[in-house]
Image (tube, rainbow, N blue to C red; front, side, top):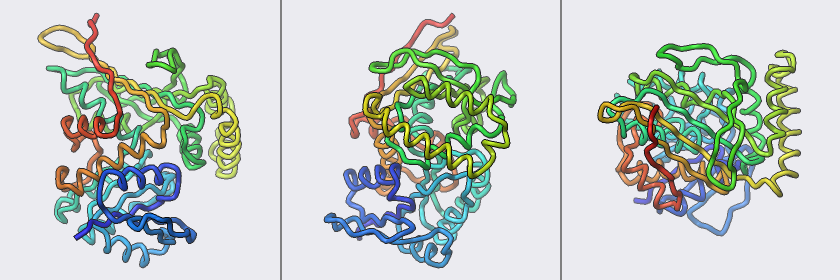
Length: 366
């Protein structure tokens, strides 16, 4: 029988990229949902379903009819774990592109229930989180003892994503967050401590700032021997970094905690990137650098990648997880972030099959 994949929020920029990747790399039938009706396309394998996630009974029926559910309907700041719970209830495997800490914490509470139901639920897939998590795992595995993970991300303009991602960015500026520093959780203010990092061409040297991404939260739990996990994010053109810094550090907190202000900033930002995307592009560069001990010596191992379209790269990350689940190559009941379940061998296979090149190598430690 043909596998059926239900993609919630599959008409957004990220969701559409996931749809395309799964259509390319599997033979599955794909059901794409959105809140409003959508005309059918010429691809008979892709069907559209009008579905509001608040309609629990219709959502339940859609989930029960699928072999795999992929949750792309962010922002996850506003989502409950209802979809995950329904998947566990009906024994349906689950994948999401969650990028928000509170949602992750809630989802992980269903780990044992997913095990009991035989449900593989993989959270935090995509590009970052997602591919970035696996890059970190691959680097960590090179060491006898890994100590510090530095993850750096630079996104050009809109990254090819929609206004939902803009909302998520501003929501991430609202509050300080905890990061794993010197073997303990310490409070960090978002968009502080600018650092200039050299990324592969065409980006070169760019500014990045502390930012709360899921890897900040999940990597210390997956790899408890780590002493530090540092995650920094930036944008090009650099003017966006300065505007974001002002939003995080100068605006009154009441402004960026106001939903109407978040909407205003998100739409203004998206309008601006519509203009600057024409010369900045919409790509992404990411770097993972791990410091630790190898054969008794301090060493550094790094991995980096560049992709011309951030949203497409996110589709590759999530689509590859879906592909491996459908092929039976990725079966691990429970709820876990991608770095805890995806082996490096499968990760490398996914990247090679999608034409994504990783630049990797050792550097002398100090």
